[in-house]
Each structure stands twice: as structure tokens, then as C-alpha cells.
Amino acid sequence: MKIYRFPKKEQWAEIVERPRLDLTKLNETVSTVLNDIRQRGDEAVKEYELRFDKAALNELAVSEQEMDEAEKLVSNELRDAIILAHHNIKVFHISQRFVGQKVKTQEGVTCWQKSVAIERVGLYIPGGTAPLFSTVLMLATPARIAGCKEIVLCTPPNSEGKVNPAILVAARISGVSKIYKIGGVQAIGAMAYGTQSVPKVFKIFGPGNQYVMAAKQHVSLDEVAIDMPAGPSEVCVLADETANAEFVAADLLSQAEHGIDSQVLLITTSEEKLREIQTETSRQLELLPRKDIAAQALDNSRYVLVSTADEMMALSNAYAPEHLILQVKNYEQMAEQVVNAGSVFLGPYACESAGDYASGTNHTLPTHGYATAYNGVNLDSYCRKITFQHLTPEGIGHIGRAVELMASAEQLDAHKNAMTVRIKSLNLES
Image (cartoon, rainbow, N blue to C red; front, top):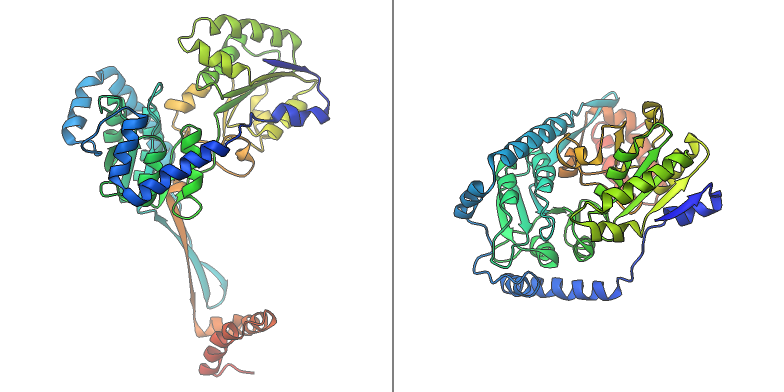
């Protein structure tokens, strides 16, 4: 953990910089796998599943029998927790429904928008050491609310060809249409191009490792839309002298255990609190089962001591964190100053874990500084806004001449003529 004490503005670029990796070889591998899947479909997918996930698969789709088996393997207590989280996510995302209205821009000229769901979406859910069944809820629940007709989910199986049962239970609760035992780059390729088993989707959602992220960006160039560009997960905590050091340390470590490339940033106005948090972080780290992963993530992370609350917030906005936690006494006031962040957690009790699982907000968020331009997944992520306009003869009278003049000025004579013939038909020429 690198510590900066009262850094000058010139040092901020160094503080907010994310780890950068040479992805040249990675992109070559990704391109090779994707091209193979585009050409050979299921056959290629099964070969890559055997190579990467050590799973020999006869069928890629998860059967109803496997879904029923998963129900028996998940405890009632965990199932109830999943149902609670699904309810809260559903309530929050229902509140985001778009209500369009017709607007008269001139007499006889009416314009409006209609929200239409993307018909077929693909969800990628990581498995491995941390099977993210919570992400199923985060991605499938708003897709169902939006009205997506088909929700396709891909997730890697274990070496026995089985999917984590909690992922399957969450998928059934949140209304997923089809589930496939496919992980990594091959999952992105299958959903982007379509195979004999997997339908081609129009937009792909979901987190993943560097290979998955590279694959998503690759297919977004010419095949499908994606939710957002993304990198390793991150958190920024702002703490003043009133912050609870135990809480802050727990928040930093909950992020650090995501992966060795995760990043945490602490910004504080108190030297004493900085030392307390350091000590508490070291103590809690020793208790974690994923201690080695968290410890490596802390190597990418920074503690920063600044002079004022305004400086804390300015540095946070420059960092544009995926998660921002405000453990400060005037958190409501400081929240008004947030410009760049994916999701914000206010006060001592709003831990990042609440948003990750069950408060109702979405945990699929922009990372790597993309919060300067992107928002997290929400209901609009699954919709398109189609615009409509209707003109009456009176409307032609109000805007027709302006259209002719503008089209002529752009030297687009056919555009001008499309309006001119209507003006003539209505005898509106002056």
C-alpha cells in the first residue's frame, strides 16, 4: 500500500492511475478463439470448454433436470436471501420505467419517444473461485422488467460439467430463458455470433476477467452492443476523523478480495485515522480465506492524506471510482459534490456489500475511470428509445421553408425536394 501525504496537484495523475497491462498477446488469443467459434460453432465451443474449463460436454444447454437438482442443493436460508435481494432489485428497477410524452414543437408538429426492449440479450456470469450468482439477479431482473423476450445466460461449468447451483436458482428466480455451460471468450463468441445451440443476441452484459473483457470489446466492433467497457473492480473510501476504522478497513478488504488486479483508494483528512485504518486493515487481512488475493490487490492500492474535505472530493472525482464510500460526518452534503462515480454509499452503515447484493441498486458498474462517461447497468440499458414525429399541413406551413433552406445550404437537394413537393401539394408556396 503506497501512502501519499498532502500530495501536490501534479501528483494526482499518478495517484488516480490504474495498473496497465500489455494486452497484445491476450488480444491475439481472443481473436483466434472468436474467429474459430464464428466458423465452427458448437464444435469449437466444446473444444475450448475441454481445454479451458476441463469439462467434456455433450450438451451445452442446462437441462430442466439440472435446474431441479440445483434447487435441492441450495439451502432454504440462501434461497430466501436470493429472493429478498431479487425483490429489492426489482422494486428499484421498476421505479426507472420511462414514461414518454407527446410534445408539440410547433402547431402541427408533434414529436415523442417510445421505450422498446431489446428483444434478445446475453448475460455472462463468471464462475471459478467466486461464482457470482448475485450478478444473475443484477442483470436478469431489469431485463425481465424491460420486457426482453429472450434472456440467454452463459456461465462456466466445473470439470464435471456442472454449473454452480446458486447460479441456476438465481436464474430461475429472475426469469432467465436459456442457460448454457460456456465460460470465458468462447461464451462471448457464442452469444455474439450464434451457434447451433446458442442464439445470437443483440447486446451482451456482464463482468469477467481480462480475456472476457477483451472479447466483449472485440465483438462490439462489428457484431453486438455491450453494456460498457470495464476493467478490474475498485473502491474509493473518503474518511474523516469521525470514520469507523474497523468499517473502513472491512470495506477496503471486501474490494481487495475480488482479485489481484483490484484496486482500493483511501482518501482521508486525518493522520490519526490513516494509521488506525492501516493497523485495522492488517489485522483483518490475516483473518481472510482469500488473504493472498487481497494482499496482492493492496499492492496496487493507495492511502492519501489531504488537508480538506473539498480536496478529498476533488481527488475522488478525478479518480472516478466504480464504488465510492463516504464515511464522513457530512456525507449528505458531500454527496451533492459527487460528479464521477458508479455507485455511492453514504454514511457508516452503507457498506459496498449492501449494493453488491441486496439493497436494490445494480452492482454492474463502470470501472477504470469510465465513470466519467458511463453509468452502471439500469433499466434503460435493456431498452431503446424510438422517436416518432407527425406533421399536419399546418406543421408543414410552420417548418417547411426552414427545412428547404437548411437542406439547400447543406447542398442536399433531394432532402430539400422531399419537403418542396409537400409544400407544392398543399399550395403553401409564397
